[in-house]
Amino acid sequence: SMAGAGMNLTVESEDIKKAERTGDVENMSPIRVDDVVAAQEMCQDAATAKAEGNERFAKGDSAGALAFWARALRLDRENDGPDDMALAAALYGNIAAALVKLGFWDRAEQAASRAVAYCDVVENVNVRRRALYRRALAREKRRDVARAYSDVLEARGPRPNSRGDGVPFSTTQAQKLDPPPAEQKLLKRDMMRLRKLTKHADEARKARVKRR
Image (cartoon, one colour):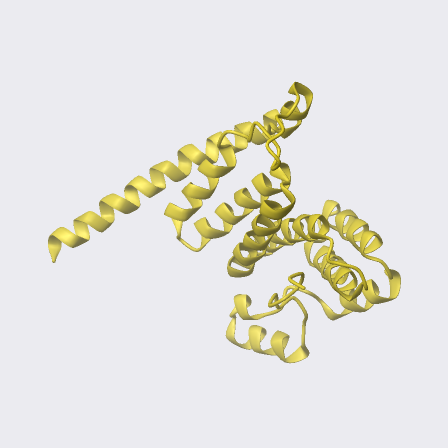
């Protein structure tokens, strides 16, 4: 099972104490104990846990949403059947969005990368585009502007014109793969902004090389 592997989303009291003591937020778990308990008590299937996480995220409770999405991943992993890769793609994309909002840049990048990987398997173009954008935001915060710019370029790139089996999309199907106007505007704005940042970073690197 790939779902949930290696993602440290659970919380321990020692994590909180250490983070408060050192100010190192990135080493602190983004999930609260009370939310983990609530997710366990309220949700016994992945779909319910995902829906509850979505509702909490919509209300601005990113940490609470994470607990329920992590619960959804665990329930799917513990299911006797095969992993639901489409569900995992959506959940990791959601997790990346929450982690970006909470300022956990490394973990946001990791979650977004997992969402992209699952989307490549299940061919979900829309979830993949959003995951790429969220990864770009995380990478920019980590001062990896070149790869952030690359992600935004890929997110804005031309949509596929056929399914994985080579059958062309109908006009209606193809239109559903285009980003909504608001997303197109956002991607264009950030592409231009990251292009400038990448150019400045390249110029600064060349200047440092010349001074050596």
